[in-house]
Amino acid sequence: MSASKEERAQEMNEFFRDSTIQAIIPPWGGEFLMDILPLLHWEALKTLPPKWIMGYSDISTFLFAYTLITGTASAHGTNYIDLRSNAIDPVTARWIDVLQTKDGGQITQSSSTHYQSAWKPESPGFNLDTPSRWKQLGHSEDADTAVSFSGRLIGGCMDTITSLIGTPYAPVQSYLDQYCADEGTIWYLESCEMNAGISTVICGR
Image (cartoon, rainbow, N blue to C red; front, side, top):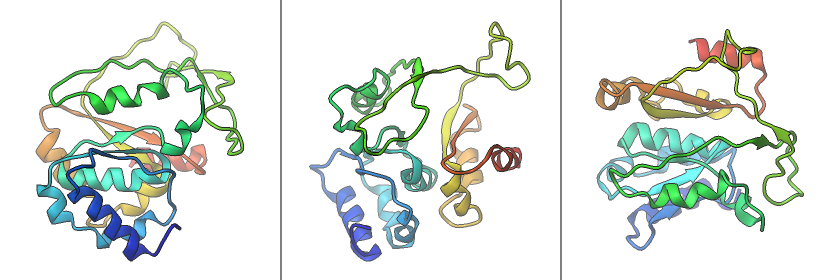
């Protein structure tokens, strides 16, 4: 941890109040990020001008709560430390385009052609060494099967957001009722250390 939970919460509250800060991009995930949730000024965050906050893995603990509580979109994207590579893949490079898209604007993204088969913290950036392959449940071997859907994206890292179930930081139903009744909802989930069996149980609830 970079500091105590009180100091980290104070820094986050100040980031949102500082009008010169337009986006918050943490350098890395934080297994202890949950400690600061009770110390954040949530009522103030609902009224302050919205800001982009971007990250993935443990950072999605805050992204999930922030979007559900305030109704403000967040960016499930690269952590700041992943941008230290000189050669950034085309999908990761779009982070700045996403954050620069104005209110009401649109941006089209395409999936990565390759993914990194193993995490290598000693190697900067993403080392994409394996071709990506999309699979549709029930049609995993049928490359010609297509599906389309639309809605508001919500989700994050299952290892952490599942710990928020039943707490004030995961008002899922009220968010869905207020923002997604007409648009629909698309859940996205990433897994850090959960196996497929556990993931299936969580998704099926």
